[in-house]
Image (cartoon, rainbow, N blue to C red; front, top):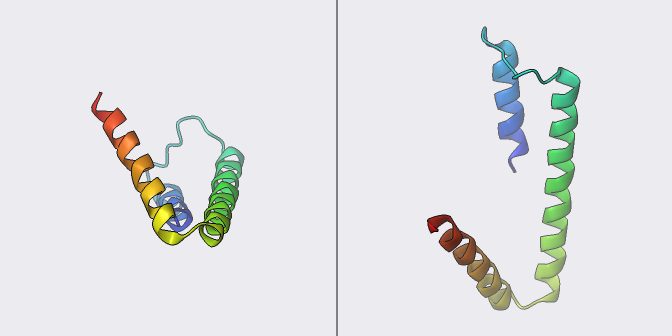
Length: 76
């Protein structure tokens, strides 16, 4: 879901006057975008397979606990 936002930011940077990529070449940017896209697809597929095999309420509890745990770790 983040791919359209990343592509839009890339287009704005390319079209803008101050297109600075911090020393990253356009080929590297395209490779990074491809990796982000493929990783996103793989993670969505994994979550969909998990959701099909586990009751929904259990999945919600586990994901909530993971989110709370990571949220608490940011407070440390």
